Length: 108
Length: 121
Image (cartoon, rainbow over all chains, first blue to last red; front, top):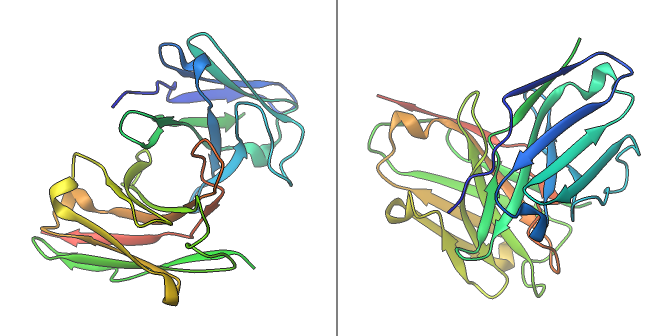
C-alpha cells in the first residue's frame, strides 16, 4: 500500500483560513475525501470527490486536488472547527481505503 | 433512519478472540455496490482500515492482520460480524463500523459511534 502524508498540526486564529495538505505522488489523479473528527466522536465526512460537500457541511469547507497535493481549506475558521482532519483515498491495487495520518487543527 | 451500531466486549484478555457485531438499519447490504467496513483507531492515533465485506459477499482484509481477521454478514439480521484472534495490547482502540455507499470512489458516508476495546496483558 502507500502513505498519505499530512502535517501533524495546523494552528489558525478565529476568522482566518486553515489549509490542511495531504500529499502523495500524483494524488491529483485520484479522488480524495476528507473527514473531521472531534474528541470522543466518530469521524464525519466533510469533503468527497475532492471538492464536493455532503449536505449539512458549511460552504466554509472546500477541497482541491492537483499534482502531488490535495488540500482541505476551511475559511473563516470558528472555534468549533477545532478537530482532527483525515484525508482518504482508495487503493485500487489492493482494493481498500487508505487514510492519512491526520492533522490536528488548533484554533488559537 | 440510517444508522450503524457496534457491539461487543469492552475488555478482552491477551491472546483471546474479539468478536464485534455491527447492527445497521435504514439500508440493505444486499443493495448492489453497498459495502461495510471495519476501521479502528488506537488511542491518540490515526484511522486504520481492517476489513470490508460487499453486497456480493466479497471480502477484503488488511494484509497486516489478514491471518487474524474474519468478516461475515447476515443480511437477514442486518448485521456484520468481525472476529480478530490472538488479541494483543496493541490492538487496543476504538473499532468503527463504516458504510461505503454504491457508486462512490470509496468514501465513508456513515460511521457508527465506535466501541472502545481494551486488551489487558
